[in-house]
Length: 161
Length: 256
Image 1 (cartoon, chains in turn blue, red):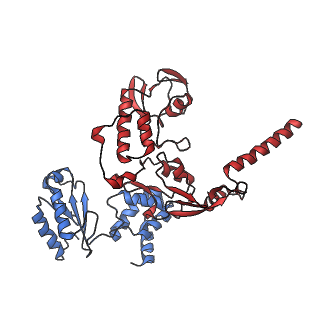
Image 2 (image 1 turned 90 degrees about the horizontal axis):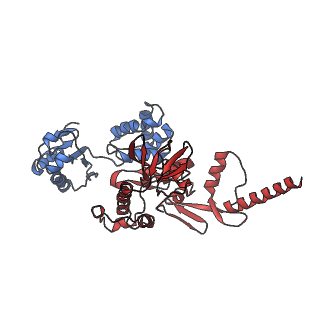
Image 3 (image 1 turned 45 degrees about the horizontal axis):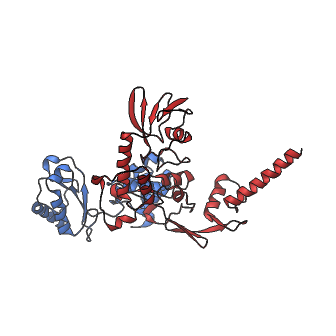
């Protein structure tokens, strides 16, 4: 990605908010939406724009799980590890994804196709254990059915995108 | 105004905190995240005391709770001891080898609470930070804002953006000097100070030759107070100079 382009685009995003500290999170969310992660240069621009030191923006950026400092994959697999899903064996699903893609939670596969995240409750406990891929919910999963679903996404099907 | 601390009457001033009042009256309350210069963080909770006012008894953080006429404060009873014991056991689980936490545990005769004992393995043993946030506040108050608490939960720590040497850091060492558990590494050797992975050349005092401040620190202060006064003296020599001047002035005054 072109550096000056990132800077310009980030500034454009930030400019839709007033240059005030309270908008840091809102701006970062928009930047995250655009790039699927927060480029370093963007944080610098946001800090300059709202008039705080970089450390304050970095603190916010690292605090929220919805924000990422590392580039994310095309498909984001969120395995719910809330109480209900945990009890229903979400750890087996996490292990299955690890086995298939060779990545740990928080990592992105080498081909850039998948990122794995664990989240604490997605509000669909009736379907436990649940996995959300690109905002599409898959419930009542077993490791085998999850493998099938992931293979579908691998084949280029981008549900929910 | 008068309040009662541990059964004794104590004269207090409106607006001060229980902690300030107690310490002024010679009553000891332990703290970690509190500094007279940087009050009000209230994160460490070691200073909890029991307060009785308007017929209600509650536990409060004495470092932030203001005194009120007629309140009764207890700094040491079963409840407070239990609170302190749990807290110090938790701190100790996080920083098992920190000598300041160990000293507090000894001082207050804190028993080991078995369910709070953890074994997190070797890597964890060097940890000294209890995440009280006093260093971050000190950096904020300096106006430099080089460090913050970053990440959260088990990964939470104090650090510079991207763990890189920070452009804003002036190497003043305020963070290290306020740290209650000596968790911030600052080394000083041959006129070079290293802190937060950044090295600074130190300036020598023109009187005694002691390395006393970084060039960036002096430049920062000059710019902040907006004058160009001579700052090449260390604290001690400055005091000496001022004392001499004061003596002269006093002499002149008395001669007249």
